[in-house]
Image (tube, rainbow, N blue to C red; front, side, top):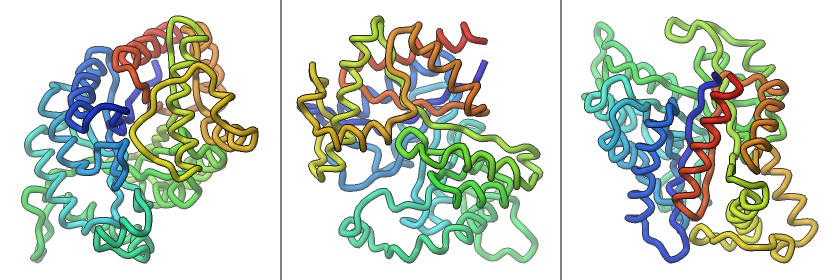
Length: 329
């Protein structure tokens, strides 16, 4: 069976609070553990009213502490926002608390806008140091070397697994060069996926901890008992993406009955392009879509985003997907 993992933005819904969003994410992580999902990742975003995972390391600790076996990690930490030393200490602490269960996915984008980046006291130029920062971070999490005077405590010797996240050929090439697993954000940036996987696999340099390439592909899944209900639930995701285009971001929106009345033809084309890798429908529809996706893309693992307004419907969507994947296997 293709390994399934979950990407959670910890959505803050209309009329709800971050506290409620965090509680629902913990419940979802427990359900994911029950259903056999491999990983549960949260992402770093700042100054966004609809996302409660800005303090990503803190949220990971909350989720890992409330579960027993599922791997918990970042999808990702935006490394240009931080010093490698601080991230090594944070994730070294997490690994010390929850040994063998922590992943550290690393992104190069800031996860916010320029005004907020200045509030973080960071410069866009820090992104240029991403490869060097990744290598420094790997060193800080590795065994202490003779003569090493700066150590991450906790952190040194924990060897927290690193992942490179990306939506372009840049991340694919870097992951291949460093011999690291790679996660492609095709759930919102699908255009370069086939080429990125070819670059990653074709130029992969084996490393001691990762002798073979491992490519994880992001998709959106909205599964329900009927196609019509799934399409209605999916309108929350469509509205959220459209609101980014309109620069009217806010809490995660309720589903609506007719998305066609909400957007223009041009907006529909843009949003539908971004959401191209989405499986939306009944169990039979999702099964057919998943079978085709696995044949066309050939991922080693799927990172699934199912951001739905109703929590019970969200849990049910992940249940259906797990059942479908087992059936296909």
